[in-house]
Length: 377
Figure 1 (spheres, one colour):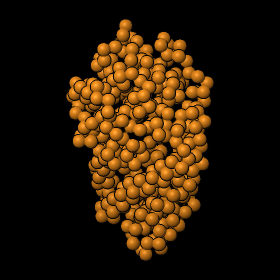
Figure 2 (spheres, helix red, strand yellow):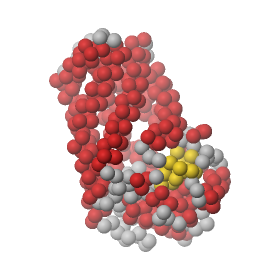
Figure 3 (tube, helix red, strand yellow):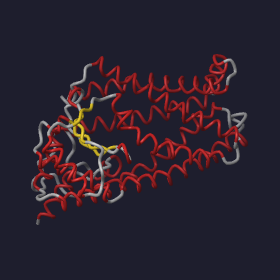
Figure 4 (cartoon, rainbow, N blue to C red):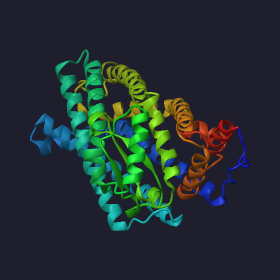
């Protein structure tokens, strides 16, 4: 592993190490709390109690009862995790990474919860309707429907979901806009616009992305990036994002997600049938009190596969970096932008090997800068 003393990369500060260590602990605590909640609901039978409450409130309407049950589960999860969420909010302020006031944060939390309720209700209603209609092959049908919805929601994200939380305006810097559009055209992708992302209203961190699919594809640049980085550095950041398009990482990632989800639904079907037919935990497959069991299977599978998926993501990121090196006149802006982003976002430049292996979807900044320097020769 490359050391933090790699040329062109300053060492990690104690502050950055502490911040990232706390963030990892919060992630693990949130995961553990979620798993414990699901296990307790199943072991104690409280999931059946919530189902019965939903039925009584819904007047025995199955669809309405499913909606109420999902709402109670999400509310319970939100209340249990409220302390960790608030600590995360305070953590960003403690390390001077946030501009967001408490009221704005609470409003975002409410909007996020309501959006989660809408999306979860759609998915769960589809799930149990299919189980009732096609109990033998429900998992295969639901897998196909969920993947279709996944792609649909990805298209909606930049025009429906993201604007719920952030403001976007067309980029007014025409010279930079034309430069980025030409860069995207050389990469063989057509963007539907370049937008300034008003991230500074909530955060001091910087970011940029190529979002959406097809007709909704657009470039978004945080104002924190636009205000603190040169045009050459912004071009380097976007060139990396375009590298994902050139290497077809989005369709490849969708294919990987389809394969993993297929295995997940197959495993969920086996576990659910065992719980119903062998353990008699639920009366029928369509008893929506078994939802925590299905979520638990999905959660544990995602956790087990996280290191593998992160390794795949780091491979894609290295490919996108190499495309960036080929697309810009000099790698110097890439190196300087990496160091600026690390400082501004308080990122770890040189995490330990196991931290990078388990938690990081991007290669360590030391490695990315070393690759750029090697390319420069």
